[in-house]
Length: 116
Image 1: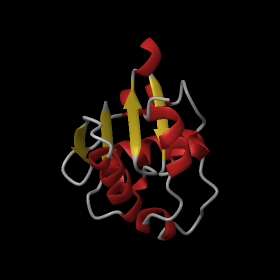
Image 2: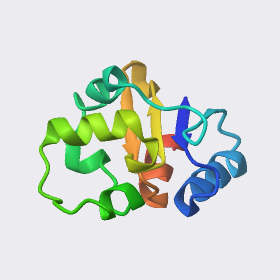
Image 3: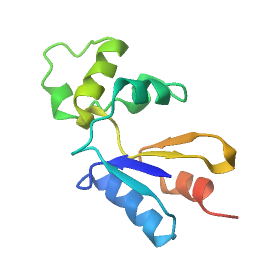
C-alpha cells in the first residue's frame, strides 16, 4: 500500500496515525520531495474525476487570476506542483485489484482497511 502526501498536512497526519495505530503497513511517498508525473495522475483518473484529486485549497490554485481552467491544465498543474493534489492519496490492492482512497475519512478507512 502506498500513501502519498505531505507529512505536515493535517489529513495526511491522520491517515498515517490510523495506519500506524492499526498496524497497517504502508510506503509513504512524500510529495514535498517527489512530484507525481502526468502518467500517474492519468492512471488515478481511471478511478475518479479531476475534481476528486485537484486541491482547490492549494496556494498555487488560489493565486490564479482565472480559476476557470481546463481539466488538462489541472493535470499539468498537479504534475508540476504536487501541492495541487488533494491528499492523502492511498493506492492499495486489497481484494486483488488496484483501488484508491482520496482524503481522510475514518469511517471509510475502517470499512476498507480493517478486517471484519
